[in-house]
Amino acid sequence: MNTWFIYALGGGWGHLNRTLSLGRVAATRRVRILTNSPYWLKMRELPSDFKGEVDWIAADTADIRGQIREQLLGDRYSCLIVDTFPRGLGGELVEVLSRRSDFKRVLIHRDLNPDYVRRDDLISFVAEHFDLILIPGEGENLPFANLPQVRSTEPWLSRNSWELPDRATARSQLGLAAKTANKTVLILASGRAEELNFYGEVTVRLAGQKNLDVRCISAIQPPNCPPELWRFHYPAFEYFVAADVVVGSGGYNTVYECQALGIPLVSRPFRRLYDRQLQRLNRIVGDPRRSPAIIVGDADMAVEAVAALLPLALPRNLRYENGAIAAVEAIEELDNREGERTT
Image: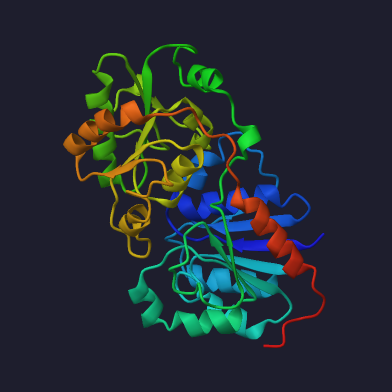
């Protein structure tokens, strides 16, 4: 069985969730994921339907670049799949991609800060070193989108539509009455420790409102969030069918999971070194083809935005397409080609 080695280093949910979504669809392959996401330490305590291997490496590991380079140069695999960073977080993939020609190369191309792309001359690097570039629902105006090896898909999601529970089941799992006239707001808290205060404050403010059920879902309980209102569950997407409105960031998972199900989103974008949350949201806000979204800057704005979006809540859309399926088909097509790379 051919092995797919997935490089998913990066601190947030996005890298890990995208690659787990890809890996669970690729049932006919042996999948290994290398990650430094601290969320994996929480997730591995939970039951998982991912049958592949996940190697976790601490971000502060001594000589982390050397260890990754040694592992990738020494192991055998038919395909190397790199999420987001073509050269690796610290440039450790440059030597690997230059020295070995016995595996296919795939880049998962999420939106990137253009300053980073220019600084490292990434367009030329990607054109030379990658056989396939997959854009997982991030649009066409991306740095590498015009390269000939690009394939675009719908966003990659942690669950297919037929795998989600019904609304009554999701509400029961959240500790709520299965049937009620109340509206439901889910608050997805993620990001840096100092950002969790925003989610805790919004949870408390909304919980005091009449005819409104509120739950905060996160790996770490935000400050001031009452314990009875907090849950940790992976994937949180399974609970989205219970939501009338979601409050979260502008991260990849939050935005595209809400869009898939047609759920109004109240989003506070946070600044990141490479990801551009505000730009992701700007592609959606005001687009009549998309579910409603409001960008906010603080808890006061978030509470007002929730009130504005609750009347717009619609029945969940359960006919969405999971782009991870098309992505796996594209990688399998590449992996099945005979012969080694010539460059």
